[in-house]
Image (cartoon, rainbow, N blue to C red; front, side, top):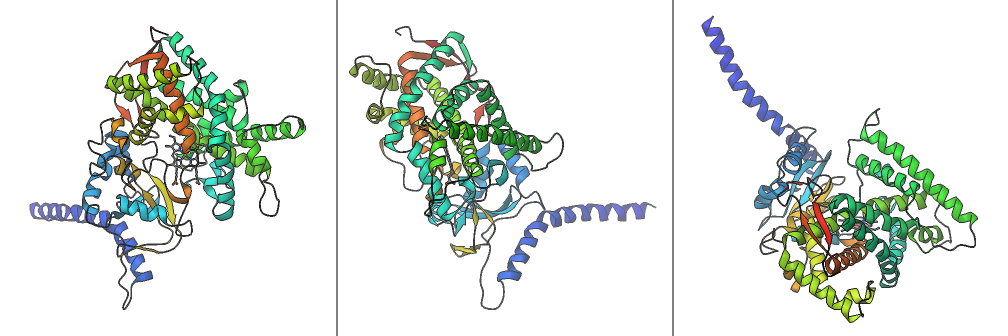
Amino acid sequence: MVAIMAVSWAWLLGAVPLLCLAFWHAADAWYRAAFFLKHGGRGKKKSLPPGHMGLPFLGEMLSFIWYFRLARRPDDFIGAKKRAYGGDQVGMYRTHLFGSPTVVACTSAAAKFVFQAGGDTFGMQWPVPELVGLSSLVNVEGGSHARLRGVIIAAINRPSSLRSIAAVLQPRVVAALDSWADMGTIDASREMRKVTFTNICMMFISMEPSPLTAKIDQWFAGVVAGVRAIPLDLPGTAFRHARKCRRKLNGAFRDELEERRKKTTKSYDDLMSGFMDMEDEEGKKLSDDEVVDNIVNAIVAGYTSTATAIMWATYHLAKSPGTLSKLREENVAIRESKGGSSFITHDDIRKLKYTSKVVEETIRMANIAPMVHRVARRDVEYGGYTIPKGWQVLVFVRSLHIDPNYYQDPLTFNPGRWDEPAKPGTYHAFGGGYRTCPGNMLARLQLTIMLHHLSVGYEWALLNPNAEINYLPHPKPVDGASMSFHKLATK
Ligand code: HEM
């Protein structure tokens, strides 16, 4: 009996680690075998980038969730990999993330390679395309992509359009700041979202705040939650709710299109009218579905990102009194040079050199998009390795922005570092290549306007300066950067 038990224990003790080992290597072996079957053979010396595919089906998602959500140490997620595969190594590694076999680019050289390749090499693959819209900018390639980008850039990213946007935004910004001072204490994250949404509604669809825009805001929250959820269309899931919200948004925006067609005498100077007027080479206009998809896409892309960046600006300034006082000095000086006029123009903004450094440093440190997604449209050779067709390619831009080789003391908020431009290929907060964010100048403009009015007229202090940071879905302090908020005594 004792002997049988001893043998069973020996089996168990030997078998369990072996099984665990086999389980751990199963997915990696599977992908390597599939690669060998396709690319192996006499004379062919192709291999996958170094790395490991993680657990079967899950890949390295548990590790991602652990570092980003639970341990709140997002930089450790990639740190060890970067040490192993960055430096003199290829700067890319294989893994399995977000349900796909993946190659992660983690150095500036590897990022440059991905960004400089065209869409026929590394295209775009949005995780749940239907929620943002199959015909939206992020989901199309080639000529349609270039034309839609052209409309967005003309409407919101050119100096001429930014000039009029600066004038439209400011009364709303000033009204919001005054209302915060009346409140005395604010949840900065929530308030920045409100004011950003109000501005977006004006710029993109010419809608003043109303019960309808409040509903649209809620439906957007539903869609965004669904984009990041597991795509299971079952009762109670975030994905089903997102699809419902998306249908409601379609209804609201289609009604708006109908209204505009009836009001033939009224002209609109906004993004929606840009899409309505757009024509292809044959003079064909966009369908209503295409207009709606692209408005939804623009709002999804430009709303939370901008609001989060503005929140981080107030957060860092609250912790950096020296920076705030230099910012204030520059902005008060420009206001005085204009005889105390309360609104600045786009031309004034160009003179705010220090403010632009605060903006850039905020965006670098916020790392609103930690990674940029692509998909290999064909087998791609890089550094002696092959990225197989169909694999997801992630450029981990966060890891560039916090790399001490590229930024001295990278976790310190230091606008002065922008006295010199970033080293080429090390700053990709707005992505890169043919998909670079077409709203980047609008985002910078909104931040600058907010910083101007905040610094000349208000003071604020974080209620919990040591609050922990959540990194998913977007980085923000757990208390939403709650702060006391008052008018400056001189105002
Ligand atoms: C601080 C604010 C913002 C950040 C950090 C940000 C970041 C990004 C990033 C990383 C991408 C992916 C680029 C790539 O794939 O290479 C992107 C794409 C995009 N962004 Fe932004 N963005 C911001 C604000 C805005 C605003 C205000 C708009 C206004 C409409 C906007 C519209 C878009 C669109 C439409 C795309 C898709 C571009 C394409 O696929 O061609 N973004 N953004």
